[in-house]
Structures are given as C-alpha cells and as structure tokens.
Length: 144
Image (cartoon, rainbow, N blue to C red; front, top):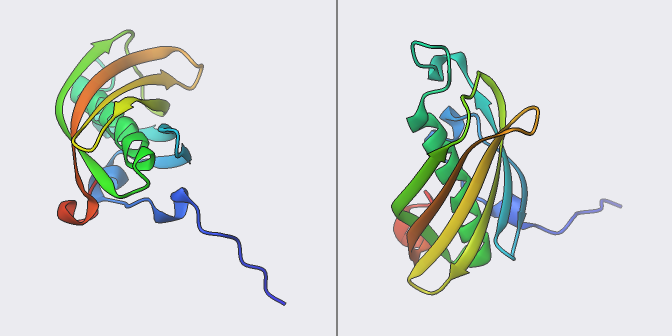
C-alpha cells in the first residue's frame, strides 16, 4: 500500500528564474499570510566593499513578501509590487540569509506587506514594507 500525503501550499507555490538566481528556498508558508524563506547570498552579489549589494537585498525582501501575499489568497491572486520601502540596518556578507514576510492587510485588489531579512546569526540586515496589486494568478503566468 502506497501512502500519499495531501498537497500543501508549498507543493503549489510557483517557481521562477529570479527565485532560482537568488538561491530561494521556501521554508514555511501558511494561509494566514506568513512566509519563511532562505536565500543564498552569493559572492557574485557583492559590491566592491565585499557586502551584498542593496538591490539584491531588496529583491530578496520582495521575494519574501510575495509568497506571503500569494498564500493569503490561496494562490488565486498573485502580488505585483507597486511600491517598496527598504531600510538597510547592517551590512550583509555573503552566506545564508533568512526572510520572514507577512501580510498586514489584503483585499481583492491591494495588499500591504512587510518583511525582515536576517543573517545566519539572526542579526537583522534589512527590512521592507510594500504595497502590491493583486491580480488573478493566471494573468501573471505563474510568476507571483
């Protein structure tokens, strides 16, 4: 007898080339609008001083908030970021980074999101808040 486990949000979450580039690993996702993500802070992402470039950290924060919004809508809608505000709290060195994203409020057309990115020691390196337009998932070609 073969046992099959029920499909979860993690099974249904869409993948993308951008997520792969960032070394995206979805650790936890729930319907309440929370996501936990691990990223690979690659040496190729550094600036001349040897720290991870701010645009890369911003992309990681965005890719932490997106799954939270997607899950809060049961995958029916995908978030398209319309604005993002990032605060860089400390320099980030290459290595693993961890994102915690949450939905502050979501409706049928807009979502308000937040995220924090920490290093392997649990030290916050950046935080973000964002607004996203919620569009039918089929219209985004699975690139939420």
